[in-house]
Length: 468
Image (tube, rainbow, N blue to C red; front, side):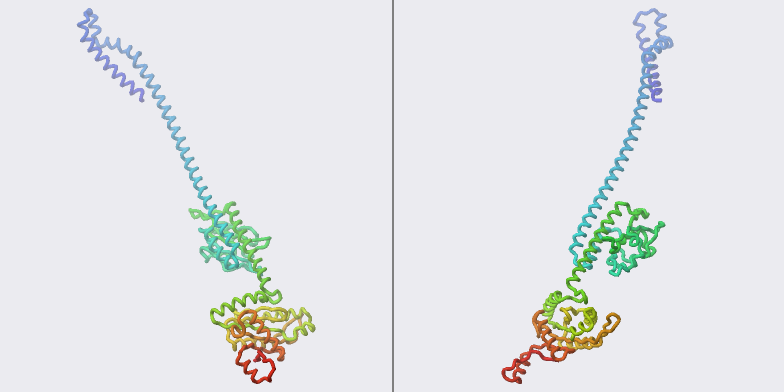
């Protein structure tokens, strides 16, 4: 269409040129001296047009038309190439935009992974520095909440009896997690591998998860050396922006496995530490504190009582005629008796008091914040209860036993652990010399010593032991 428009313009231009050419010829002819007939012929517009138009058509117009057609074709080709280029540029722009978005997503994921690695490293260091399960629980609550900020979770630890997993801590919404559950109520614990389920699929839900709390629920077993130590339960896993739930990817499951391995190592190490500590601080036969820990904790309690201006009673207890009992019933029966007496003493004292096996058949009770008379009466009640104790060994009841006890009170009878135990031991043997099955109290009073010296014959050594 553009070529035809150009041709029309050229045709009009040609007609204009012919018109003005005729006018010019008509004006010039009178001066050329041409014959009249020839001049009239030239002046005739029709003849002039027939003469000039073919020449102008073939010399000018046709060439211009061909050139315009070529230009139009070139223009169309250029427009087609431009459109194709624009399409390619648009496609490339989309590819670059998608690549940019993918790169930004990858960078964001990489930053998240780096943040998780840093938090996991901090958690590992703090776990290593923790000294008890209580501290481990606080560290786990803080660090796991940072590690999985968009989820809720709970950490469960297996009981020593292995019949129950107890909730150690939670983060996020704690209402969706049971306080405890049996091992066979969790598919992850039963199968020894992660178990994911949600409310919109056909996966089997764990029995310990209530309906309504199963949107993206993941249970992870915590195992070490083939032994299940606990479980880590997470909610709101795989929830997308549209509200749909997608199972965790293999990479995420691998990361979860790294977290549970860290927890398993921490729990196993803490249990081993507590076992070793128990063995170091406890008597293996009775489960009471041993002599070394008794001296350590008694020294701390004395300093505490000194600052609070309180009294501490130290009671030394010994089983009467224990050697004869061993000879009659055997050493195994003697061990049974010691264990039974240790259990009775432990149950008859307050939670703040301390009971320890001092050695052999000797026990020590530390009465925190007690008065003199009250300490004596409490120990005498224990002595009477021991006399009624019926100990069973191999289906038979062992013979009747009795105890003797000596009491020393801080600060009147001693200023430190060594002097208090020494004083209690001295009156313990005074109780044995006085007939056994009795309680004696050590009292260091100068006035009574002076009074005793006044009534004793000259040269006799006064006694520092006063029986109750």
